[in-house]
Length: 502
Image 1 (cartoon, rainbow, N blue to C red):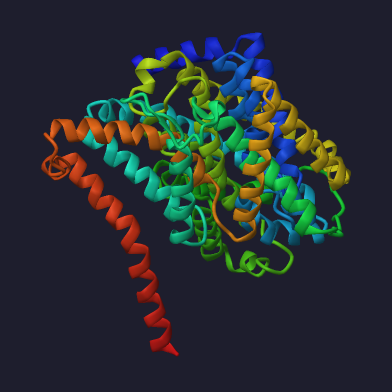
Image 2 (cartoon, rainbow, N blue to C red):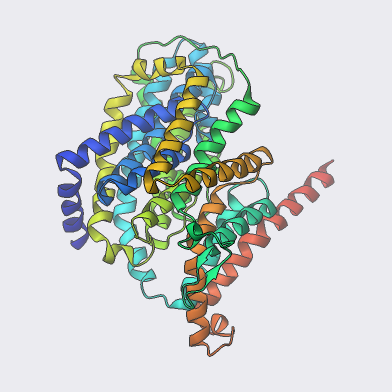
């Protein structure tokens, strides 16, 4: 009963005119970001991080959640009309959605994607409401050894899951850990790795690094390497669904939500696995006469299921972020930075230390879901017009926004040099397929992990055996080892099976 009282309180906070306005702006901006190919929600949130110096914490987090959530709705528009996913999570939607558009059924594909996103988002938000407090309640009992192992798990999952190579992921993580060490030592108060530059005594601003790695690097990469792409757009049709479309979509939405929600809850990262699983499930369960539509003129189940799985995964990803402080995607890593900028640390203590903010954020997910349905069904034609924005002006605007926002934080020219140095680092990482999210995670959680390690070693009187003597920390260490070892074992086994068949 206490959960419902807190949620009601959250609705009262999120329902104030100012917070509703921030939610609406976030949802609209997120949809626009999803529609524009190449600009993901991580880039948008990173670019707008400097507003955290001016806006109250609750309003800011509602705004960022709207962008995060809205981009998932908008991503399906370009997938269906252009066969160009605005987000990697919309790749599977493009497979059947674009074929439906070529068959003159773009409207039905867009409708099932928008309504499916709403259904899955609502189901997943209920899961967050019910289970996030329970996870936090259990996690709050952890001590320093368990906290350190939990952060080790965060480092491992983010490094191993986000990106094509664990080695590249770990390299990016160590870059973040190194940046996190710059500044004053937490215990001794001595300067570390500052190069005698007084500007670095307080450490490197997380906002500056996030903006450089995502927004600046994204714009530079687009300008230098992507070139001019000619895109052909399929004709829009009326955004409606027939009775048969509804009959085929409803079970797919429910199945997609059921597949996607667990993937968001566990720190496994990414929406690719649940969306492909959902697509394979729909293809297998479709009636024989509908199976013929897959890969030919486009099957509506192949759009409805994956889009629902995508949104369910994205929403329930808030559980590990809010309760354990573990981000499972690029965008949640940047959201972690936004929390940090307010001096708020997501994790087991968050539900007690910042209860009002958390419940307002959860309530805003319900509100944002309804806003996005209204924004995406009747106004889809307006979003399609965004595809005509010239790329040169778009990326120039991103660079100007990033530069002005960063300079506005401390009015420091040094910050601008640092911003573009980090941007060049992000460009190199992007060019050579190094994931950028582990840098942010290492930078934020590194100093906290260091403090917890020191506390744990004090408890163990200098002995590392303290991590093996406590059941929970030992369990977490086993999970860390499994995350690093099992994918390699499965890959080797599958390779042997292929060779045996060959």
